[in-house]
Image (tube, rainbow, N blue to C red; front, side, top):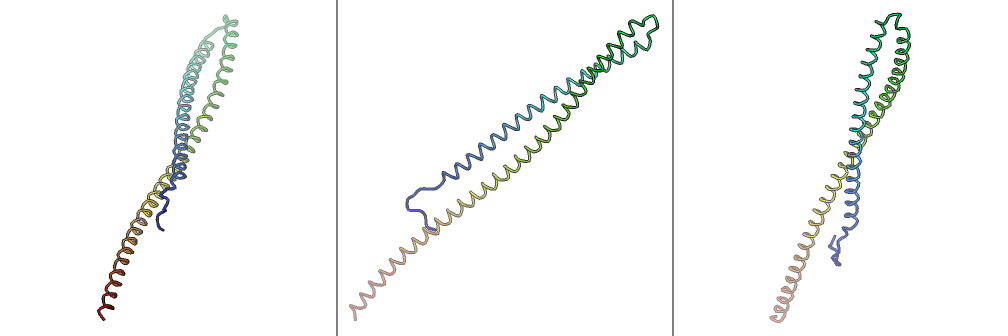
Length: 176
């Protein structure tokens, strides 16, 4: 295919596609970073709740130990402590529910991260394929230009040889 005579290259659509891919990759990287920050936050919150849970378990164990050693003289105190334990157990159940909910959220976020990594991997593969296609196109265009230049050179040489032959034929005709 001969080169275009107007000298313009049609690289604008390719640049636009490359720009779109770069923008999409940047957006995916931002999303990935956001998800990593969110995961860190949720993990930290989970650790805090776990520590609070352990503290409450220890406190609950202390209450139960004191109640086991209490005597009948402390009936009023025992009743009051039992109420406190019930309140703490409710609090503990609430915290456990929060922990379960956070564990579910962590699992969901982990799946989302895995999905985003897969998408990122696919996009990287597509980007590499596009780069290879672009390189092949450039190589083909370069080969076509070289072939066209060679054909032009050979055409000029043929024209020159044809003129020389016509001149020699003319000289032979005159010599006859």
